[in-house]
Amino acid sequence: MKRLIQTMILLAPLALVAQTSNVVLPQDKGPDKIDVSAYPAAQQANYKLFAGKCSKCHTIARPLNTMMTKAEWERYVKRMMHKPNSGISDTQGKQIFEFVVYDQTERKDKNPKAFFKALSDEEIDKLKKQ
Image (cartoon, rainbow, N blue to C red):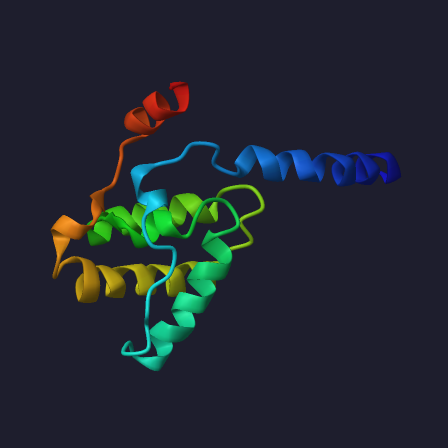
């Protein structure tokens, strides 16, 4: 058991590197923060949680600059929650989901041409190969 724990400690940094996205998407080049001062207090708190958790694995600009439907956001957040070392609990996942949906409705849907559509896994794989 002690050997297993030592091995896990040694491999933990490699797991973190493996989970971090190594591809730059168009969304990553956009703004990496937004002004949420006009958002309700609960959404401001959710934004802080979102920014802290989601920036562990990819740029925070990626979700901030991506347009998705509510169903797509739900799938995306659930997918991110299950990534190794995401550290996102069910409660936190719900709060992050509430924020991205609120932000989608209040900011992105009002100016859709300013944002990028979500890329498919196949499109992301093509970018990785370039």
